[in-house]
Image (cartoon, rainbow, N blue to C red):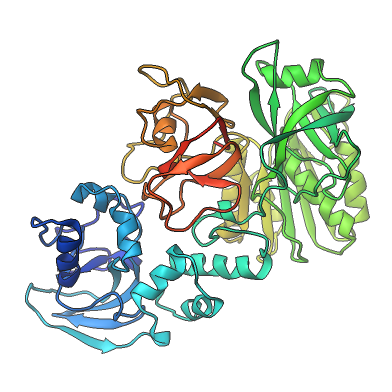
Amino acid sequence: MVRHLNIDGDGQGDLEGHGGEERAVLVYQTDSYRFWSERLGRDDLEPGNFGENFTVDGLADDEVCIGDRYRVGEALFEVTQPRVTCYRVGLRLGEPRMAALLVAEHRPGFYLRVVQEGRVRAGEEIVKVSTGPEAMTVAEIDAVLYLPGHTMDQVEKALRIPALSPGWQSSMAALREEATHGAAATGSAGLTTAATGPPPAWGGFRALSVASVEAESSEVVSLSLASPDGEDLPGPLPGQYLTLKVRVGGEDSPLIRNYSLSGDPGADRYRISVKHEPHGRVSHHLHTRVRVGDELDVAAPRGTFTLPDADTPVVLMSAGVGVTPVLAMLHAVAARGRERPVQWLHVARSRAEHAFAAEVAELIERLPNAESTVYYSRPGQDDMPGVDYTAAGRPTARQVAGLDPPAQADAYLCGPVAFMEEMTKALVEAGLARSRVHIENFGSGPSLTPGIKGGPRTAAPHQPPGRPGTGPMVSFARAGLALPWNEERESLLELAEACDVPVRWSCRTGVCHTCELALLSGTVDYDPSPVEPPADGNILICCSKPTEDVVLDA
């Protein structure tokens, strides 16, 4: 019995990467079995080995089109997308490269949506009912996403197919957006947002001098950084961050931290703003030891949490020191002098800890269509409602709905994880599409380990068990961990997993780019080589090893 979500008794094991109405039934072909038996020198391949629900004669990937409809027995099916590049097929076959080989040989297989439920039997004829619009084959669209060399005509053709699954529609839209607005970008925006930013302005770290030190609140200090030779610094995008390499207390190994740029992106200096954390060695050093004229080692501006240059409404939400990247966005809107609608919402404990209050007020005043709402969670006795802040407490879902954010607005959120989760939920309930809500994590982002982990990891990043390595130094910047490379590891991904550094992956063979992240300094070698190279300045950690000291944005 075939149902809208799966086949009775033959459901999907990993619902993160498979399943749902768009991926209810997976199809693979006997012709591809014969191909792989010869290609891999195998005589033990049997139906089901590739994880498919239907093993079929005919229906080749270079003949079947997205949107084609087929009747089998009582059921009616529609082709929605190629197979996703999952590590499971390689695990099942004992061939780690299998996900990459399926793409490279144009034999991915495909998914079906169940249009009409019904019973099917082995041996029944597969009857084609209709051909999908655009006549775009499974093999062609798979190559558009995963292989280099696609054209915009192919992307536009894919976007005109109503049957194409929402996930693939989003990937095709990202490829179109990249071509339209991201001419400087490399890699594939259709595979990962890590490829949506421009290449870094310089490789590795360079020395910048501290031009000024300014107290912004009782716990936040801003450092302005300039080129020692007086040259203009490359302009960042609003919302990007800097990575600093700081030596603290005479230690041999530097500590590496990321800090969002908080100033006007058009200024000739970079401004970062640092909260003095109770046990933060780097923040304590920057607050108490750094003076004007000192030099700091800095990597180029990075990050994809950025505000596009547009006229559409924007919602900027922050809590505490999370104000820094959205403040840079507010500067960017004000600098362009447009009537872009802006809704500003910030949460601080009190006036003493409300960083940039006067600066934000001045920027909001310059924007004719800007509104500001400030919450103090613990207002002081002298803090004046209606003057220093709008309301006491923290914003509720009802209060966010009361802001009436336009449906076409994009929202940018930064602050503690709980704040971003609550505000994201509130904005979606208020009518914003989830895709229009963008968040920035100061620390490591959430892991993505499909079908492997029973729940989120709770262990803090740590040195791995076993014998220490003797190779190049590997630094995980967001995790605050550095250790020598051990040649017994197969990849940087495997090392990160051993250290409980949060990671994201799916194929583990250089196809899907889920693991793509910024390489802040150093070089790597690949084995196997990626099917499509990552964006300039990024690497795929699932299939790479360091050839010298490396700093990773993880």
